[in-house]
Length: 391
Length: 240
Image (cartoon, rainbow over all chains, first blue to last red; front, side):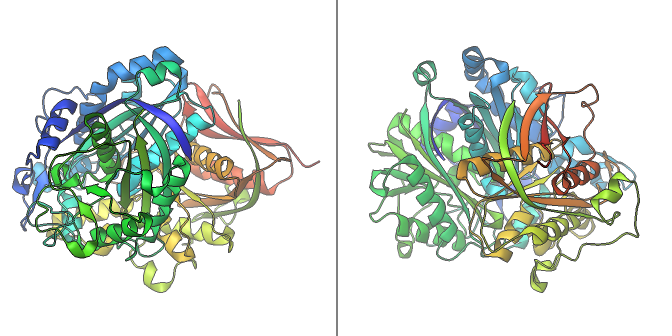
């Protein structure tokens, strides 16, 4: 869809910091934030994780007391001024909310069933805390919005699918502004699961490096206010969503297509809908998970879509892979890149895997940035790309 | 408020406890029957959950050679797989890689795209209002693309370990919908009725929807809450 809708608010929280500005400072400074996984839970294998700081105590989530709720509120509460502005412009019934997550309250379910924490087969888990949309009513109430609410879950592309849903609501005049939010927490099932697939890095992830050995899982949330372009909205705009594209690989449930056909198709579609050509793109924020196959597949897709070398950044090297929140997390960082006119560094890149044929930027780099393509690819061959531009 | 005027070309229904949609409404049950989901080849069937099997069953009944965008909707997602993974984890600190791979809410979407060799986008709506959200998403995609769009809705019973919805029925329904200039169906947002604070029973809602599509009489089916004080409805105008 060709959007042109503007983003009038953005917030982010993850292992780098629980505060948006602090996340930006640390991400662009190349700060290291991963910790041994043992700080979260015990695992019989080596890995590191991106753990949210200061999660307990300062966030009121009495409505649904889950870790993912705390993570979601960590970003959502920062967005309140922008949401208030949207409500003033359009009215509460014209402001919607689309939430995305991959695991939802799975961590809470684990806690309830953990025999070491007193969980037993007779102790029933609150279903509402487990579900993906557990936080939706509470956050909608907190924001004071009364528009259409829904939840999306398509693994690691979830938050971009949610952004697409929000765009359709505005395009069809069912809303004038939509809060798009995403959150995922670490949980043991996810860590063990990615390890079982051989996708978990034993040390901090090294996207696009010759020595890359897999994913570092992180937790976090990201929220944006997507708003119909209007004089007043544009005055508050941080960026413009020019185009979104989506496609599936139709190849394998967890392995990417070797040539990234789904990635190619969704990047081309996003460009088409943005009415831009590949040469207009100044930077690509890659999905860049750090697995051998994912990075090779994405690099192949980038190489085929863009005839020239475009600078690439892989922000999961700093934030970890935040699963359902990965797309919006990268998008919010891309918006900050547009504001700063700087690319964030990709950490631990050296030595770059030159066979991949992509130019990954390993240091904070000043550059004229007007349009950035951001990718989010996931299980099920579910791919989505967004073109985000200066407002 | 009318959102979309639609054609619904095909519909299918499967319930583990009912032979057809009419039997749900008539409260006639059958011997519990599992889906056969021929859409998936043998090697893709291992570890698939009931909800994914239900999606594949009903999609297989309506799918054509024409690739189309697809919307999957499920209130509970892969909840049985999640419970099994956690139980395995606490029993042996090992999880099955195959089962974990199929634990995401978009498992059905991924397997469907591989089975049909379709690179068209898929998405998965979930949560308490997944039926309404799925219909809305599918209708908006059909309007946006001007093309037929597949909508598949399915849910499996929530495991007993959860304190929540209690049903033993697995149910699925699929629809192929498209925008129309001479529409029979109309999707609209209407003020909620007095009893609509109750979450709609998915089994009954899907059965009524399939009857609405297959029947000829004018009628309306509530799809559940979509925004504060409002619900989504599908209305059939009746055969001319």
